[in-house]
Amino acid sequence: MASQSSDLIEQYKIVHAQSQYGRSAKTHRAAIQACIVELKPYSIVEYGCGRSRLCDDLEYNEASYVRFDPAIPGIDVLTASKADLVINTDVLEHIPRAEVDALLEKIAALGNRVFFNISTRLASEVLPNGENAHCTVLPAEEWLEILLPHFPDAELVHINPKESCLILTWHSNVASIIFDLEELKMQARHYKMKSRSVLRKLEKQLRIVKDKFLNPAKFHRP
Image 1 (cartoon, rainbow, N blue to C red):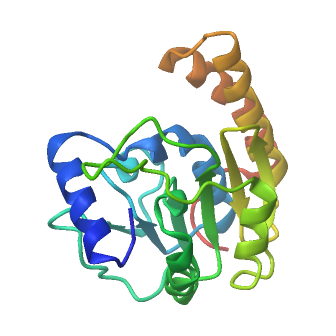
Image 2 (spheres, rainbow, N blue to C red):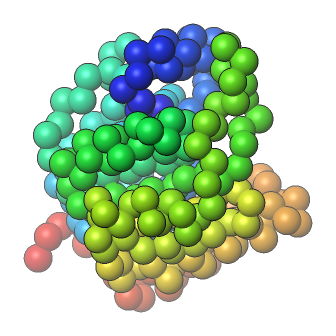
């Protein structure tokens, strides 16, 4: 999480000390990989990363990768001032609505290319103070309206009804590929094919399309 509220940060320090909470970014690896193929970033910041180790799973070694979460010792200080790509998955719904715009200003100051995934439902987790972990639950369209003043090129790429939404803040050439990836994930869950091996097979099918248009073997800038 990435709230600046000291009380809320303390709540999440307790949560992170007792569990492996905060690894959802890994479920978006294929979509994030597609963004990296397109942007070929020199620097990546995972803002509000929780326990995520997404950086270990991405097929890209030419960028500096900074993990930041104010509730986890060791990565509780942001060490980057700019980023070619910012990853923000399942964070904004944890932030009180009154703090969201201030947080978005901080993220926008890092860079204008941000991968947002935002949950649009209440969480199954409850904080130590008894409050639901998702304190700002809004529909996808409302999240887009909140983002647009900070990121004028933001686009709603995918909606998982009553679950989450995925928003990119630039006009992406891989938006349709990401949409297909997210749709396949939804189908896999619908048919209870949740194993990692099944999802990897689905990703492989779309990799053929991605290779055709983007040639991901070439990770250097032209």
